[in-house]
Amino acid sequence: MIPRTMSTQHPDNVYIPFFAREPQVGGEDEIIEAFYAFSVLGIEEQMWDFEGKEVDEFVVKKLLERYPHFFQKHKLGEDFRLTPRVPNPTVEKAEAKLLLETLESISRSADYSKIFYEEEIAPIFEVILPMTTSANEINRVYELYKHYIVGKQYKRVYDVKLYEWIGEFFPEEISVIPLFETKEAILNSAELLREYLQGKDFEYQRVFLARSDPAMNYGLISAVVYDKYALFKLQELEELESVSIYPIIGVGSAPFRGHLVPENVENVLEEYRGVRTFTIQSSFKYDNPPREAIKAVEKIKSSKSKEAEPIDGQILSILRKYEIEYSRQIKALASSIREIAKFVPSRRKRKLHIGLFGYARDVNGFALPRAIKFTASLYSLGIPPEVLGLNALSEKDIEVISDVYKGIYKDLSFAFSYFNPKSAEKFKFLRGILKMSQLFEFERNEEHYEITSKILDGEINEELIIKAASIREFLG
Image (cartoon, rainbow, N blue to C red; front, side):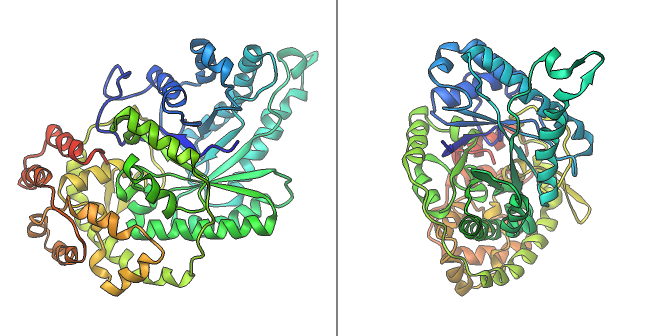
């Protein structure tokens, strides 16, 4: 059973979950959150994020101890999955050794599960490797677990072999899910995966395509086109290698980050044909009535994956001028984004985290916040990030792109309803975007306009930012 939905801990929610003891969810609350995702929302998989966050390493033990009746009926590792996202030592030097700790905990969790179920069921058997840029990085994690975490059980410790003393290690091997986040890695994902699969006899392979950080780095349109190009190439690889490949896509509520909200489920399913698993992020779970969220999750689960659409690589050439203009505008807005981001509330407890662009991005000397605060900051200024860079494209360009990015008119119309024309007075380079708005049908949200006008005039505070976010029904 390959999950159709994956609950994540991305902090894009406006409203605080009912079970949270404080605005920043973390620790024990995330144990409850995982159970809520499984038992109430019906989401089949929970990402457990060791990358950049303080999380509970004893999550399996606590879930089985606290909710025994549920997990006796629904086996963790079979009916539901728990999948850690681990640090990538190539990039995250300060967190590198946490990879070892996380991999060590997999076998320990299997021991708890064996006692609980009285049979060998591995509750964790896959890990997600973020910021993957080479097959070597994937192989290292795979080999590290197989030969050094599990393999050491056959080493002798004084007078006994390790497994004779502390027990056998299970599972014997794990699957590594590469998360591709940069333009180069996404476009070359099929080739990188092909290299990794050489000499291995896997029943299937999962692969994770980022959606938020590529949008932040290259613009909305490029992010969508790159992911769809990768989906097509991964489908070709599946046919070539005769191994089932199941892509995951990381979509949030804002169009900039994927536009997966209950009322837009069918459009997202159609947009990202070829995707097996869709992320269900915090805003989806907590900024919508539970009944709507449950219904939407069920709609995704009951839908069938469709074949990815063929993408002509020539369309990538249209995106160059768009990305140059998008980057120029982001650089011009960087200081304003940083200023607003100070007032955007945090919804998760996080460690100081540095890595690729989407995590601590340096643009022309300006550090930018992570994707969610980045998105929230721009919306708060009345400048939805979806519209940036558009003035580099002609009406004809957009028509051509719409053959690939089916929802471009819907997504940009949504964004323009929150665009404040006064921003073009403050930032003159936005006048071209104001002119581009005429290509789209939308009705300006007046309440959001009033709030962002105050922020543009210098009245910046958390209360206004939250109020604007509650109108949009997502933070960032």
